[in-house]
Length: 191
Image (cartoon, rainbow, N blue to C red):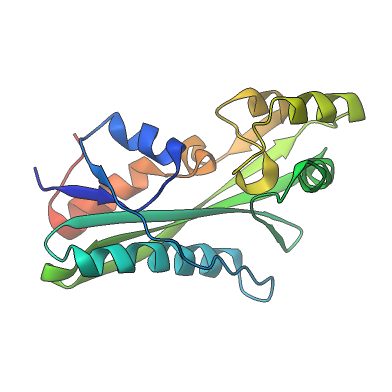
C-alpha cells in the first residue's frame, strides 16, 4: 500500500479515512477566500486544490488527499461561523429549508504528474426549528469549526429532516467517490 498523506486538520476527515487505511496528516494554512460570485463547486475545488498542492510539492512521491466543504443556501456560501451569534444566524437561515453541501477534494501524486480535483454535492432539509431548539443546539458547541454551523454526525442530526446524496459528503469527505477516483487514477483502493 502506498503512503497516503491527508492534507487536512479536520477531525471528521481523519475519522472517516482511518476506518480504511493508515495515513499521515500534514496540513498547511491557506487563505480560505469565499466569494459568492463563483459557483460553490468551483470554490470548494479551488480550496481543496490550494490545501493539497502545497503539501504535495513537499511530498512528490506520496499520494496526497485534501478537501474543503461549504454549505450553500439560495446562492450564498456559508463557511465556518465566527462565533455563537454568527452560528445562530446560520442555523436560523437553514431552518425549514433545503440547502446544499459541497465538498471539493483533490488527489495528488506529483511524481506521476497527477493533480486531480472533483467535488460532490448533497442536499439537506432542516426541520422548522424553534428558537429554543436552536439555542439548545448552540449550547452543544458543535457549531464551532463546521461549515454551515452544524455537524450532521453529532447532535446536529436532530436538526435534519431529510438528506439526498452521500452522507459522508455532508460530513466533509465523500469517501466512496474518492475511493473510485483513487482506483481509476492510481490503481489504489481503500479496501
